[in-house]
Image (cartoon, rainbow, N blue to C red):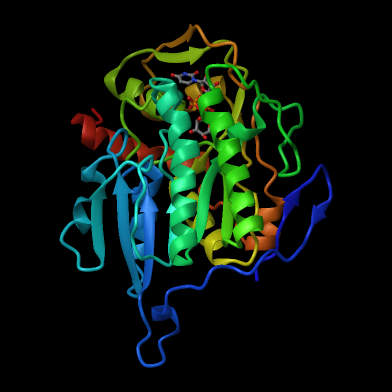
Length: 348
Ligand SMILES: O=c1ccn([C@@H]2O[C@H](COP(=O)(O)OP(=O)(O)O[C@H]3OC[C@@H](O)[C@H](O)[C@H]3O)[C@@H](O)[C@H]2O)c(=O)[nH]1
């Protein structure tokens, strides 16, 4: 049984929880090695669709995606649509779902601040009711479930870099709370279902991630800067520009999620690239690489914007044997290529 890592203020307790619900008898079939059936909620989204690509590379995996297409798109999965080991369901996780699966990657939730703030009540319902529905499903079918939580559970952190033991500095009534408090409750539900019902859980705390297939008008900083550089518009640096983030390329993120799911440790575990940049540094890099003619423009910001963020990934390295491989300077051109193709402009 998996080890239980508990963030209890510094001591990493290891204990044995209640035994998990029995998996489907298919898993123990003597004569036929059944395929692994994997559900990916939010699988039509940016990280979700890359995860699906990776999972389907393995011939013994079958993947079911559920997505409500609020931010995800069928376009991201078009190469799999007719594939015999793939199934796509339009479904909103705030409604119950019954599918026979062995693994659940629970990603469903808008992740860009402008999208999760658009309908904050829906965002918190997705995190709370959606996660309860997914845990109920895991209990019913004996599946292991991985939640993609977020670095936003650390809020505007007073500890730097952030370790998993840090409890965070989060405003419960701010405009970001629907997302960061929502994900905190989702983590609580995961642990309560684990302790009370023995559900096999994994929790990843995802730090800022970028790469091809981000929505062009997603609103997050890397996609905004690249789209602006390609369109010849000013790069909008939200004041003061000295705030920091640490950017992880999407293929590294997906590798980390799969390692966590198939490993022995519950987490929570930070998955992110610890190379830290100010927003101003990032703007200068994008300008130099993609369009030296564009201006850098300082624009307004919201008061709740975290001033710094960088993961401590000691646990991911030691426990999962995971370390990010793609640097920002390697990843930005890969994303630029995808954005130029989709925006429909050539470099010159
Ligand atoms: O055009 C822009 C957009 C954003 N920014 C700044 O860039 C920084 C990063 O902003 P983003 O919107 O990309 O992402 P945030 O770090 O605020 O939130 C993200 O955190 C981690 C994940 O869970 C989510 O993807 C998302 O909530 C912020 O300081 C923001 O003010 C700009 O300077 N210009």
